[in-house]
Image 1: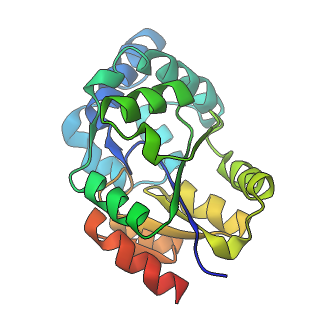
Image 2 (image 1 turned 120 degrees about the horizontal axis):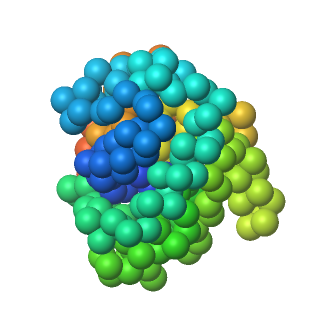
Length: 213
């Protein structure tokens, strides 16, 4: 059976949330005593693993889940600022025209994701939103999604922008297309070993067709 479902990550993959994330993080960092993050540091951080980023910013990995929870809480007030990456709407439209079922699986909150989709008129395009604030909880969510919807691993492809997305998909036995325009640098993603790596949203359909062949 071929690919029937495409599941997307949200931050970095569908929306460019970097400026918002920096502002929220710095507000928390000032309060907690972490190193502040400047926009020009992003390219350097993209080349580092999640653990290395924590070290560079003076954040204990043990405190990362709590930090993520606080960032997501503050996120609610700024979702109106989030813009979709260029080409995403056209890419999603082409996938839907091919009859593929689109979903989102993210560590962001469903409320935030749904607000962005509604603002861009895409709420009806997405069949489901699956959310967990656990930084490394995507493998469990993917397995739950497949069990709930009666999907085989062959029917589903995930699209994400971080090495932890690749690791989660490998753990769940799901194929993944990694994107170059998100949070993690292409070289870092290549080392993680996704099934494919794309440069622009316009390449997603052709890439899916190759994986399904």
